[in-house]
Every structure is written in C-alpha cells, then in structure tokens.
Length: 216
Image (tube, rainbow, N blue to C red; front, side, top):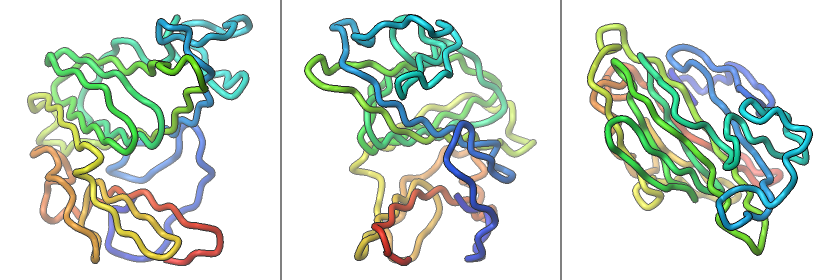
C-alpha cells in the first residue's frame, strides 16, 4: 500500500492481525486460515471444543471461527465513516448487506464497500469442499473517508478477478487494485467518494508477490 509516489520503504511489518498502516489507511487485517473439510452445511467438519464460540481468534489448529458460531466469519455488523477493500487470494467470502447487495467472491476478486453514513454487512467464510481442506487467505484494508464525505450514501462494488490488472515480470506479480502503476493497465475506477478517487490524493493499493531472489 502506498500514499506517496516516493520509492522509499516507510515501514516493514510481519503480516499479522491487524497489520499497521499509515493515514488514510486505518489498518489491514490479514487472514490466513487453514480451514478443514466442510461438513455439508458450510461449517468445519471438526470439533469446535476449546474455542470461544462467538469470539474465536485463537488460530487453534491453524484457523479461527472469528464471530461465527457454525460457519466461520463475521455475521451482520455495522460500519460507518470509512471503506473496506477486501482482496481474496484463496477461498471464498459470502457477503450480504443492508443495501440488498450480495456476492460470493474469491480467487483474486476484490470487494470495495464505502460505509459512509452507515451500512450493516455480513462476511462469512463458507467451507464448501467436503473432500479436501478449505484454505482462506485475504487482505482487508480499512480506508478512511475524507472528512467532507464521511456521511455519504453507502456504496458497494465488486472488481472481479478478470478486471483487476497485474504487472508481471520474471519472478514478480503485482496486483493493482487502485492507483496507477507504470507498465500495468489502469484498475477499475474506485468509488466516487473514496480518497482513491481524488485526483491529487495518490492513493495506491497493490499486492506484490516475489519469487525467492527476485527483485522489482
């Protein structure tokens, strides 16, 4: 993530929960859960004993239920005054919200929700595979809204994986969610009230994969 055109590295942090960021980014939640096989009802085919169901961030056996009681994830909860940008590398998210929007997304898809004056949404992690494990890896970035736009109407949009450009070179794959990157196609337009939509804000959201020994 970048908020300035400088090539300087402003900080290096291990990926955890959450990952600290700088203004206007509020934080980044990085989830890497090795969910087991599903039980046919999108829940883990595994014992939930020893977990604080409803608030399980234990990473017991390499995964958490979070606020889910049978299906892992985050049942209906409110947001206000900021945006969430969710990039799913592996696994699936089932989203539904008070705008009436719903989507099942994953595998490189990006969801961008402007909460504005208020939205209630649900983000659950369905374990669809019953014959194999259901790994989930995602980044969710909380992006502040400009003061003049904090109470705008909520907005929901999806950037499906085929719409999200990549810059690829030897040993390098850069996913471009927001912001111009020389050599890559322009990403889809961000929501109109976002910092990322301001011409002078220079907000960028990229993820970078480097093979061992690669340079970019």
